[in-house]
Length: 141
Length: 141
DNA sequence: CTTAAAAAAGATTTATTTGTCCTTTTTAAA
DNA sequence: TTTAAAAAGGACAAATAAATCTTTTTTAAG
Image (cartoon, rainbow over all chains, first blue to last red; front, side):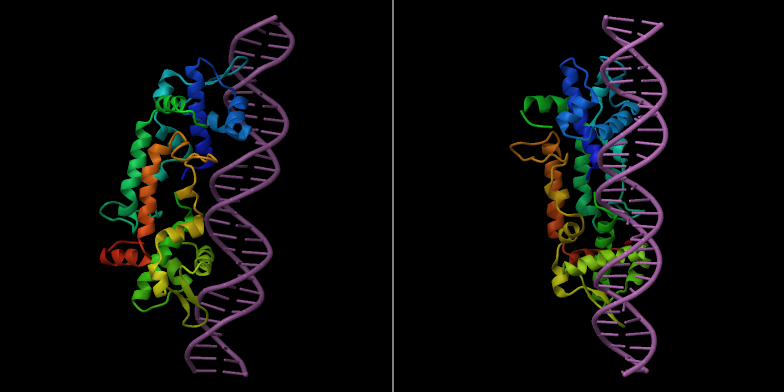
């Protein structure tokens, strides 16, 4: 469903959100260590998210990644689209060039409602929401 | 969501089903031409589906691909799992090694119901069903 | 102003997926 | 029994995704 890069990105964003709420910035090493994810690869992903203004960073000593108030309000679908593009939510499930309600592919009506459901959820979960939920539970990232 | 190979495989299976109902076998060239899909690549995919007993074939002149009665009854999820594995339906959305109702990842409860919905649909649509629906409509493959 | 710590950037490697090409096997018809 | 048409199989090539390594830039503290 999501690429590895995308999964890493979402998990990292939540981690950074939690840390930000604790008043701390996070470094790539800290993040990659806790998420068990390749360091340099994660760095690239975070770069991309910074450029897209989905997370924030400062260089130099005492620098690192954090979320601004604006970043906190962004919904997960932004991260997904930023990294994987919008094909998952917008494209035809079977890859047909045209596929719509009026000209549907053979799986359209079976898959569409559920895919829309996922898309809706992703458009309505902010990073802040996810970080809050995560903090409340005692689960892993 | 699905790999290209998987999309090609599903579309090809439906095409072959339709042709089979018309009493005809289909060759790779015919299939790849009508689906607009790379010939040799499709051939590999069909090989795999034959081995998994999801479609049937005979070699030699007047040979080609077709669906036995058994093949017709197979549900789409078999094709998907055969080609892409079961990660899409069984694995954690965020790629966590453990993720369950009692120990969920941050997206679990948002995504799970819909993913289950898709999985359900795929487990309940036979190739014959899809071929029938396709034939009834005047849509493309 | 120097130093060190951090992200940013760029170049490169590895792995996987997608795609091609050529040979072998099977099989039906002439 | 020869021939030709088809799938099967294997080796290879290209494109994309995942991952690494090295250098540059920024920045805060001493």
